[in-house]
Image (cartoon, rainbow, N blue to C red):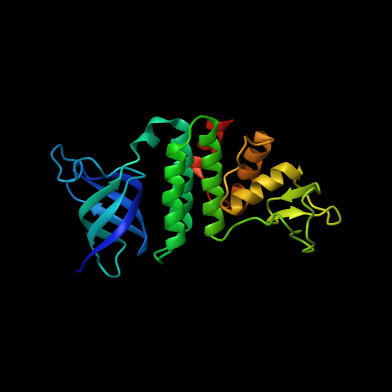
Length: 246
């Protein structure tokens, strides 16, 4: 078994026996990987209690080809992000983006997604007050986009006609985005300001001001993720996040 190293984000951690734990890592070099940290739950563990969700560092592990679980040898801490665990909005937003990556990323490298996830977690941690909510919304939509599930906001999902920026449209989550007035769709009416905010977030830009209609942004996130990314099983962290920002 070769010993490999990878820049890693811990997205999930859970007990494995009385003394060990399993970590779900998203790595820059090898995508999603699961490792067992033997002895990590012992009081005098050599890992020193740093193996917590949202922590970033360099993981060293023995890669077992053809296996799903590898053995962690060491972890060099680069960023702890413990503050995310002390704020419910920040924790819920970070948990949502982590759950999206855990569900839809693969073992293939995705450097752009890795860097966006790091930046997003840091932005949520650094934001204050209402800005933390917007940072979490931006993080969720960035991850959705990079995973390949972005909704269409600038053209009709049915006929492809370009949509004017000031044109009210319907947002049909099941169909994949905005629909023009000529194409009959179900879904809520989406005002131009909220559509513009969504388009900006999909491009990776944080809205400079509070949302024009926060309830519209919450509804967009809920209906779209449930329709496109949670058909088989719910995203547990989605409702937790929306409860915190609602």
